Length: 258
Image (tube, rainbow, N blue to C red; front, side):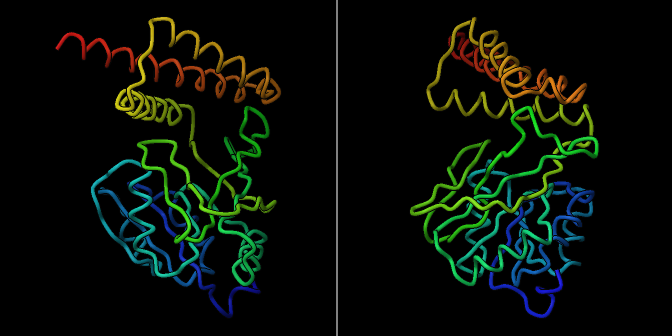
């Protein structure tokens, strides 16, 4: 990133964290080109906060409110109009940093999306729906907001969005056990969110959604080409969908019994 060393970019980076000491350094080092870096923590018990402060970040601590509201709170703490939103398991490659620099100097839209290269077991997973996995990450904070949801948050833009070809690198899972743990956490949060939105299901729903998710991921999204990892990803996608609706059904039954 030699072109970016002499002068930092007038852009804010925001990262929400909890117990991310293993992954945070690589994330923050990849955005060293930014003038302002905000880390919003939700009660880490490891060295996350210490690491963030040592790398020059402005650090805040707040109780967890769900992904959407937590990220919106982080946006409100940034200094600059243009914000780059990252997760602690994401990295900005040098070539993407150069593209961001060009965009900031002469913006043509109110938000920009990036394809994500999702890595697992040290290799880029190109199937299973994991590529291009396009997400909005760079935006004018005055022209949008994060959707206020518990999981699967997204930036809602008021204006034009341009799709960039420069990728973000994503290292979401350490191993199969990590994937299973996330499946449980996210399916619980997603079920609660659907329940609060008034969504109701039948006993057939978990099976139908789980079955369709496996077919979609393994066959239609070509997970079959990614070997054992592709099979595991497909099974866990199906499991996540199954348990999301099974837990929603459980909430419904509890509601009726009280």
